[in-house]
Image (cartoon, rainbow, N blue to C red):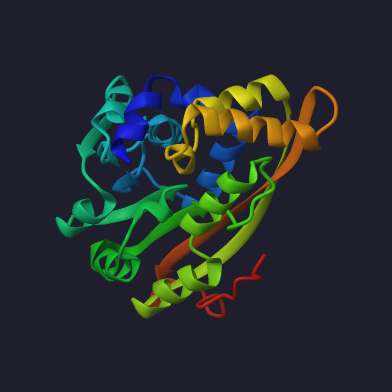
Length: 257
């Protein structure tokens, strides 16, 4: 998978800029859920190019450098342009296995890359300082993205269902509260198709150029006009030790708002 990210690393941030306001909208949501403090020890697992590691540490100046962790050295080359950020070329599992102590952890759209999540969460519990928290940002297994059928299947098969994810978290002795957010997207067809050709999602890495082109034709047959409109549904899963959570919030159901 690191090879796939190597190929898109230079343009990755621009590829994922769904609209002009998307990045600012996402940053506000992350800040609200993470509630970082100046003395927070913060790591962004699967942080890729470090764009949100940087934006978060700029919004809340930290006493210690934020850590951007990613298994792709090519992606981390982008992160190294930012001051105040350390980079670690490692998987999320390997980083947590090191026993680092953390106050805030972000896992944004990368939880599906963690293979043994039950073990990961048990290790994470021992890495969290008192009142520490982890924010997982992910999507439902069937998003409203205009994907061709085989790409949708690939996405769905890779995404952990929310109830499974919450069960894995609970098994580690951690509690979770889930919030659902929506972002309305209107994007020119040509730009969306360019994103697909660039394989902006890791789930597209296994498709050949011919398969991508056939998929684009499949999508185009179903859509009218020059614009694509959809709602991006996002799940924000806030993870804490149950002993640190306010009364009544531990073990929230998947339907929690």
